[in-house]
Length: 373
Image (cartoon, rainbow, N blue to C red):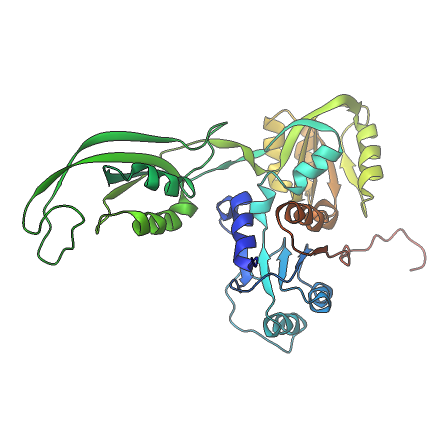
């Protein structure tokens, strides 16, 4: 049985939902081609000519990236430009491109969690918990169809709540309706008001799953007109497992100087800036892959001793010093260069399909230390 591109993406979206992405982001399909068997997959931080050449040479038709190709609406596709030529090659050769950006950053597979684990951080949780937009879906069902519809809805309307899933509530009652002359009623007769035993089934659903859940519901529900209600919930609060960044406790404790040495030894960054007292005893560490200057307040609020991230600013460093928190700044590339490896590991555990990691990516910056170049 062939494995199609759509099958791979559907499973990835189950593990790393698009609903986790930030509002400004554009994760998901960049070049969409779903109904083709997967010949192989390339994982890469970015789309580059080297990445495209790997796919062409191997004959692979799916590329998974962290950074999306498109962030803003296109006004012109210049096929004479360097980026345009790469896009032209991908389209002509039927290569699908799919990106997992901030949704990956908020998932349990994130680079923040990976780096934290390498440092020996325990009891890892999100630094900024993902606020899920949840709704309650109530649907009215005739006798004998509740289990079938519940099972279908659990495939879509089933967010994990703490340590629980498959949550629903059923109320039994009596419904009424009168089919008009144009109707094709499942129960009852045209022109007559019928009273039937029904159940009201209630489930919780995330905003991003509503459309697919309703489509599936209407396909399996026996009624010609499906009666349902959809209520926005006021607030659910943060997720225990999903959200931006990672934080946890270091076991055993180390002083800040030893943390710096450990980071340098484990990750060989292009550069490493820091602020804070080198003799500070460190217990609680926060990590944010990518740009992290917006997360200083969360690190302070959560009593973190150290925040490790990239693109931290002058003013935030001053704020960190005033609040007694140590900062470690690496390059953006050094915080995210593990994406291709992490996604490859997910894929080889889930699918029997060739997967290759793009190892040709390099830090776009160079570190000048004086002297001749």
